[in-house]
Structure formats: structure tokens, C-alpha cells
Image (cartoon, rainbow, N blue to C red; front, top):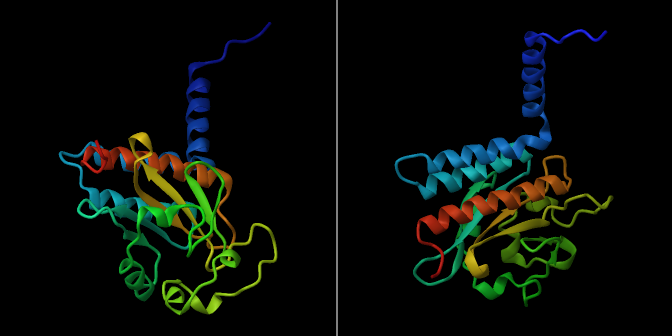
Length: 214
């Protein structure tokens, strides 16, 4: 005959499974999204706090060397980097001084070449995007520029990934930009997908604050 399972065993199993899932690296994004959603629970939504929190959390949770967020200006429709975590101060100062037009984010432009891995995310490889003297100044570790790619998941110093933040009707609101990991590899596909979901949360925040076009 089968014996009955006691309530204590059920409680232990549920508690153990929860703790195990919470510590699983594949669930890191849930904690990050939960942190971002807490910003909506405050009396007023502070965009600066939420965006900076996002950069900090992405860099820490996914162990990328840096994370940045750029947004569209409400006054002139130009795009500019606004928030960062992990950037060298001089490189960040040079990066913040730059502005971009919507056309600069097409896959192939006069200055940049990218390839899509999804509707929201594209990758810029160092080999396809030769840097001029001014471009070198925005690298976190310029001394490593020009390194060799030994394996197909190696991330070079000038490689980066952009995940777009879009509103209704593909209205381009801004972008998340991030590097390879601290171990010199590209972020894995689960990380990239998680960052796409984070971009969706940021889209809601921006639309709440009037960034989306009517």
C-alpha cells in the first residue's frame, strides 16, 4: 500500500524548489524585471532612477563589461547616450557628446554595419566596423582594440550589441547597448532574450512619461 505524504514534506519540497529556482542563473532576469517593476509602484515614476538602475542591474546580473542606454530627445528627435554602468569615465564623456539620427540605426549605413539576430537586437562586429581616431576614444579598453578572435563566441573590444526600445507602430524610443561578458565572450541567447524583455518594460515606462509619438 502507498503511504500518505505528510504536509511537512510538501512544504519542504515547495520551499526547496523555490530556493533552487531563485538561485538558478537562467532566472536572473526575473529578479531584474521585478526590481524594475518596483519603480512603477512608487508615487511617481522617476525615469532617471529607473534607467540607471537598469544599466546597473544588467551589468551586474549578466556580467557584461558595460551597459548603456540611449534615448530620443523630446525636443529635436536626435538620439543620445544618457545612462551607463561600467564605462571608463573618459570614454563615457566622449560617448555622451555624440548625437545620432534615426537613420544611423539602420543595419547598414555609411559609418556602421550590423546584422540582426532578431527584430529588436543587432550585433556590431569589430571587423565590419573599422574605427577612426575619434572612435577609439569611446572604447573602454582601447589598448585591446585589434585583438584576434580565436573562437566564434569571443567578443572583441569593439564588438557590441544593441537592443532597441520601441513603442507603438515601431516608434523608436531608444536603445540598450552592451558589451561582451567579463570572460570575453558574447552574452548567451538567454541573456539577449531577457534584455529584449527588459527593453519592453522600459518602453512602457517611456510611454507612461510621454515619450511615444501619438
